[in-house]
Image 1 (tube, chains in turn purple, cyan):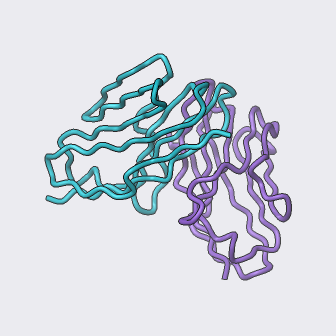
Image 2 (cartoon, chains in turn green, brown; image 1 turned 180 degrees about the horizontal axis):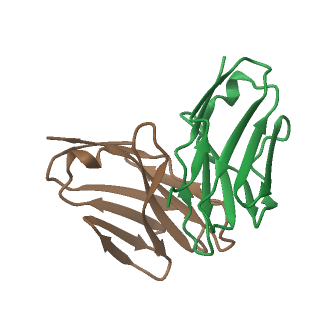
Length: 112
Length: 112
């Protein structure tokens, strides 16, 4: 079991550019979560898919952020027109029918 | 909504000693409780999960206590070793079984 896979591990973008982050959940897991981690705000929930359907995006910034899960093997988080305040570690987690979420290694996004 | 406070923010522990981290939550309906470990540059590793009907759980040198009356969750690292040096996070999820709400983290440093 490879665990949750996130790519890239590090991404550097210029202000105003687009960033797309990828997550491959553990095979057989039906739910995918995205979180953001910063020194100031800590760990924050962004959005959640179950069986590929968006269930809860209450943590997503209303502008510039979007997430999709086109198939059961991957989810993407897209940030348009990146800003320095978007710099963070973006963590993806997956779970099956249990209540335990398993996290990937994260993608460190740096916006210059 | 649910809020989780975690203390202490930092903990220095001589090798072989014990360390205790405490989290206090606000929602008495909270059903699931977790402890995660994060090493530098890595994602969150699930250490232990506890359901609300359990008061005490021990696994591999770790003891989790749940005091529902005081809404407190604690993690006791017994006989700490340098490999235990990391940031530890508590997390809770409500009855909906969705997003995790995290504590602010405790940086544990174990010195030989």
